[in-house]
Every structure is written in C-alpha cells, then in structure tokens.
Image 1 (spheres, one colour):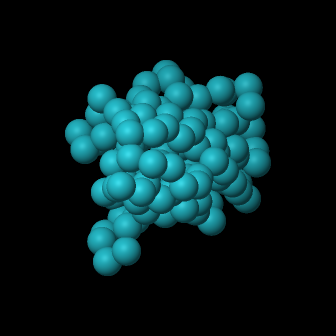
Image 2 (cartoon, one colour):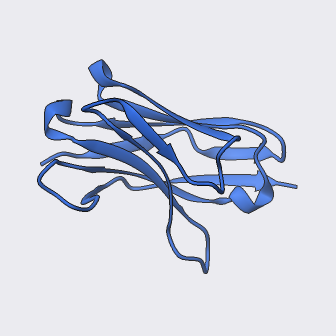
Image 3 (cartoon, helix red, strand yellow):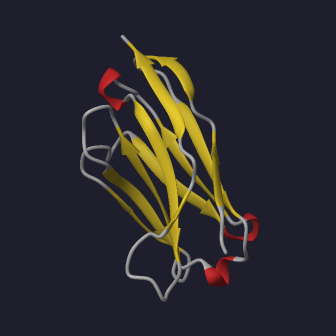
Length: 119
C-alpha cells in the first residue's frame, strides 16, 4: 500500500513563499500520478496541481497558475509545490494524494499540512 507524507507547511505573511514536499513510500512505477489539493474551513476541497510520472506532464488550476509551481523528482518519489506571492485566501490544509494507473481517482492521501497566510 502506497503512503504519502507531506511536509513544509507553516505560517507566512502575505506575499511570502512556501514550498511543500510530498514523498510516496513506493517506487513510482506503482504511482501513476501525484497531486496537491487544499481545503479551507467551510469550503470544498480544491484540486490544485498534479504531475504524471509517465511523461512528467503537469497541470495547475487556474486559481493558482502564475503563483504556484508543481515539480517532481522521480528518483526520490517526491513532488513539490512551490507557492509564491501567497495570499490570505490561500490559507488551508494542503493535502498530497497519489493514484495508480489502475485507479480512476486519487485514492491515497496524506495527513495534510496547514498553510496559514497572515495579512
């Protein structure tokens, strides 16, 4: 069973930057894609970004495009979310997730890491 563990959250002032990391426990041939989600209090979970290992393709949600960047290190089974020009509305719990090629949805989730952006 693949497990993913996030790190890198914290408190930052508006305009600042943070980098989140997420490492999967198994070799990437079993992990087809990894992605980032976030959920703010009282709001639905939002899909932010994903990377697909087979072709290293990436996708970013329009809401964070231009400020956030997703990247990955295949050899380390790790993805990163570089978050720049953070805004108070970026405050949320950020989750990493993974899915195998056999799964249509992200079915392995991390415990989440809190990101708080102060104004």
